[in-house]
Image (tube, helix red, strand yellow):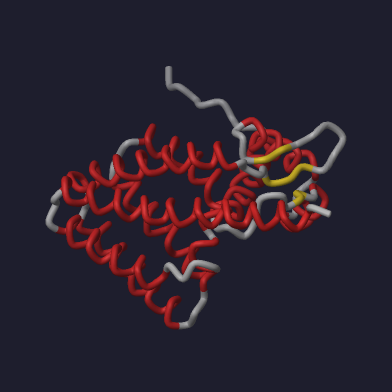
Length: 232
């Protein structure tokens, strides 16, 4: 007897659609920490009812991406200093590991995709478009992660990236990281092309540590300024 996979309820499909849409906005840095998630507006934007949007927000809340207090509007979760430091440590470890695996497993087609994205990143820098640069940078690192061919690592990395992404957008908007980032990407691509997994691992770790150190310093400075501004 042939096996027939059970059909997925329509509400579940729509909830997945809503979750992916909100995730993409968080990952790109467009939804910053503290941003409210209006169910009605998201439902109108996606052309669906509020029920699947509510379910999507509930799922994101269970993953730690969103805070959804009872009978209050949900919002993108804010991360405190100690927790952010832990997330950066996890991100460095995961990005380094998937890059090392990619150094052994990446295909010529995936390297070609990275080179195309690198050209687009240069154009975004030339146009001083930090938002476009951020979007392309996410895609660049996602190609490397996919090349690791490890689904478990990929899913774990995605969760951590979602938690950190709203803060990473500051790298390109406030910290002028674009030129140095492109130089580091060039070296990573060259190491991937040579299938030198050890060098890919080292370059990726250095790349991620520079980003994380600068971001954490910026976060602490911004927090101190906010605290000082609140003192009367």
